[in-house]
Amino acid sequence: MKYIFILLVSITFHFELRAQDNLISFQKILNEGFENNFNIKLKQLSVTKSDYTLLKASGFLNPFIDTELVYGEGTNPSFDNDGTMYATSNFVIPTKFGVNFYTGFKLERTTEINDDTNTLFNGSGAYAGIIIPLLKDLGKYNSENSFLEVSKLNQKALEEEFSNEILLYFNELLSNYLTLKEVIEDYKIDKDVLAITKKYKDEIDLLADNDRIPLVEKNRASSFYNTKILAVNLSNITVLEVYYDTKFILGLNNNKTNDSVPLLIDEVADPNQEKLLTYIDRKKNSL
Image (cartoon, rainbow, N blue to C red; front, side):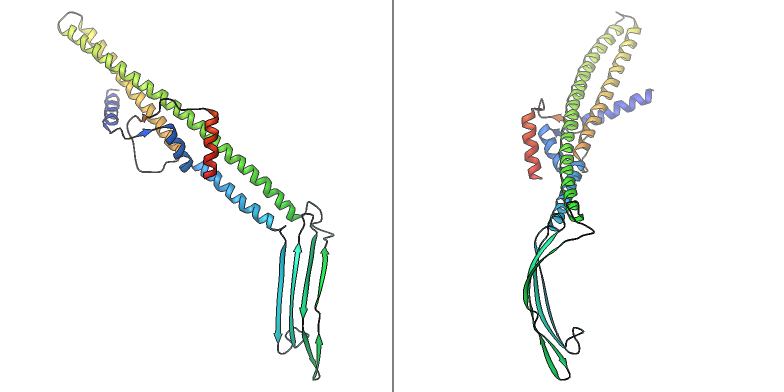
């Protein structure tokens, strides 16, 4: 027990001798958390992926133009003709019910050589039509429309998860910050009590050395003083635990270590709902 006590005293002195370079404020915590918090970044990435998935699903229902150019010469280039030239262009309008409307034109000049006789084919013209799937993908539950609707729902769900993650971050962070304030205050009180106990011990030692009180009181005062030193050590360790837990929430990944009690810049974190919601909206837009 004696060696454990000496070790705790050494740790405390080591912590307190380090420079007070770990300043922390609630605003700084908010900013760094939005920049570095792993869960927020992961949810943000999921929302971005859902945006691209929705764009892909929406693309299936966008009108498009399909164009084909064919030119061939030689021996039977198109299986039936020695000279094939044509161009087709179709304008297709898909619908969410699986029915596709289309219109287009064709320009053709095809020559067939047969027994030294050239036969000219001309299939040029304009056309329009409709494609109706009778056995599959007809109606609002066809595969393309279902994919689009599922992508919309997925995007909305992920956006809600992203917003909830930010609110959870605020809740956990504010709780940690206020806990940090509380344990720092407890640490300060324990240090003040330790200083008073030290003064009390010195007075008892003086009285005992002058034979004005029994020597047993000197031992009692020393034991009481050592108990308060242990309380300060434990209090300091509690502060560091909450402090590093707060840094973990921030998602900080650096090689800097702070082995002393952090200095809180702002006395009270402002939990005003309107201000926090405004801050959340501004940060989400910047993300």
